[in-house]
Length: 591
Image (cartoon, rainbow, N blue to C red; front, side, top):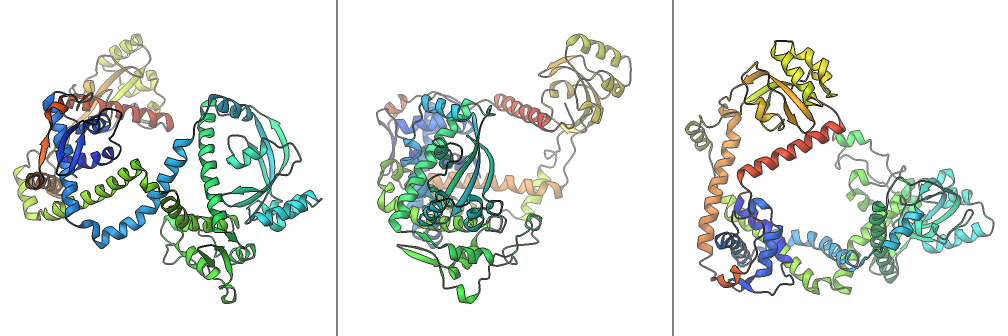
C-alpha cells in the first residue's frame, strides 16, 4: 500500500483518543468534522516518523494537516458510499464487535482501575521466597466441590478422592501437583496459600476451569529466581485477572450456569484419539479429515451445561468440538478439565459481550464510543481504497515488459563482496596482524592464529558473498578496497578489525523473469498513488475544507521526518543489533 494511504490509516486510531488537556482549538474543518489542535499534536507525537514532514515550520505543519484532512475526506466519502450497509461489512462487524466489547470492558473496568503500591510489591516479593508442594481435586461445580471437601475434612483420603472425582490431568497420581513457587502459580492458588499451613485443606476455589480443592503437603523456604520488577508485573497481572474472574463469577451466578459432571464423563470417555502434532504441521490431518467426537445416540440429548439463556446437550457439544481449533481440542492428555474449559469459553464468547454492552453500557462511555466509531471508519476507508483505487489499477504483462526494457540498465543486482575478518581486542595486536598480512601471509592461517571471534574457526573468518548492510560495521572499509587488498586496522563495536577482500561481484542486470514481479509492483504502486491523488482532489470539492492558520501556528511540531542519511544509519544500527542478538543466541557465520 502506498505512502498516502498508509499515512491516512496510521492517523485513524490516533484520532480516536485525540483530545488532550490542551484547549481544543480547531485547526481545520472538513464538512461537519473538525480537527483540533490537540488531535494535531497527538498525531505529531505518535506518528511513525517516516510519515512526518521534514520541517517543523508552518509549511511542515500544513503538510501534516493536509494528510489529516485527506483522512477525513476519505472517511466522509466512505460513509456516503453506503459500504456500512453492505452484507460484507455487516458480517465482518458482527464478528468483530463482540471481541471489541470485551476488550473495552477489560480496559475500562479492570486494567485502568488496577493501582499497585510499592508495599504490595514488597509483600509479594517476600512471599516469592517460598515454594509449596500441593495436591488438587478439580471438579466442574461448586456444590460438588463442597461435598468432596466435607468428605476430606471428615477423614476421607485426599488422594483416593482425587482419583475418583478430579477432572485434572494429575487425578491418576492422587492429585499431586508437585512443588510450586509463589510467582509461578495462578493468582487464586497463591491467594489461598498465603493463609494456609502444611496439612491444610482449602475452601473450594473458583478457577477458569471449574472448582478446585487444594491440600498443602509441604512448605519450603527458597531463593527466588525472579526479581522485584517481575513481582510488580505479577501483582498487576494478578489483580487484573482477579477482577475479570470476579466479574465472570458474578455473571455466572446471574445466569445460573451449571455444568453436569456425568455428561463431562461421557464426553471424556468418547474423545477421539489425540492428533499427532507432526501430522498437523504437515497437513496430513486437517479439519476435513480429523477424527470427530462420536457420542452414542442414547446420550446425545443429555444436558452438559445449562444457564438462564440456554443450554448445551451432548449433541450440541459434538458440533462445538468440531469447531474448536485442532491443536486446542480437548483430549485425554488434557483430561476432563479441558472439556469444562471449552464450555466456559463458548459461554463467555456469547455472555461477556452482551454483559459489556447491555449491563455495563461500555459503548456509551465517550472515549470508547469515539474509538468504536473510529475503528469502524478505518475499515470503511480501507475498503474505499480497495474499491476506488486498488480494483481500478490494472497493469498488463506487455506493459511490464515495456517498463523492463525501458529501465533495464537501472534494474541491477547490488554489488556483492566476500571478505575475511580478523577480530582482536586491542589496536596493538591489530597493527601486528595487518603488518603480517600485508607481507603476503596466508590470511586464513592468520584468522586461526589471531582472531578472537569464537565463530572464526567455523568459516576462517569469511563472510561469503554479501551486499551492503549485512555486515554494517565493516561496510565502509570492505566496500572501498580493491580485490585482494588487506585493510589497515579499524575499530568496530566488538574491538579492532583487519579485513581482506577475497572476491568482488559487480552489479549485474536482473533477467526479466526475476524482475517482472518487482517491476509490476512498482508500476501498480505508482499508478495507485497517482489515482488516489486525483480522486482526493475531486473528493475534496465535495466537502468544504477550512483551515484556521492562526490556531495551526500555535501547534507544536516536536518531531520531523529524518533525513535519508539518518534513516540509513538507523537501519544499519538495527541490522547490527540483530546480528549481535543472533550471534549471542546461536553463533554462525560472520563477525
